[in-house]
Length: 114
Length: 110
Image (cartoon, rainbow over all chains, first blue to last red; front, side):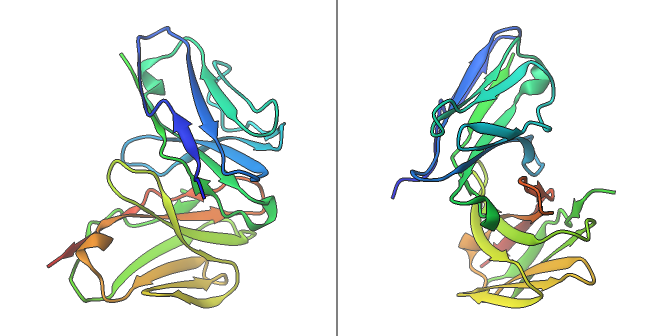
């Protein structure tokens, strides 16, 4: 079946612009995660949803970052007033059930802030 | 101290050899352990999960877990050039998120 999809795959933004990154999880997956991956590093947790509820947003680096999943399926990660340090690959992962923690990643969105 | 530590490599092995990748973690309550493979410019791909002490085999891959030593490893038998990638160790400590190491770059040369 279809995997996790993300769009856009690449985004170039001028510093100060707002961006919105979309994630479409595997059908039926309850849990959805956002991670940020800098070059040469492992992914770092940003936030987590179980259905439409955002249960953990402890990894969001600032209040410029906001995520939502209003109908428990598609999720959007929004970054307001982008800064150069926001440049990274943003990865979305989904999991069928929380208990097993097996997370499957989408292709990612590479964000470059000029 | 980082929560999940891996040698960044590169680990270079000849084709057909066994590649051994290691990972240590700091949180003793960690319950679930994963190995992801990441090709350059691609996203992480789950290749192994392990939840209890001992070995778990899947094809050419074997994951080994020792909770007392807080150590998890991945063995790749009969390594192929197509196995050349970065291997990420990830740990879940009973919460929702995965904690990743920085990854070990594996190079398999013909």
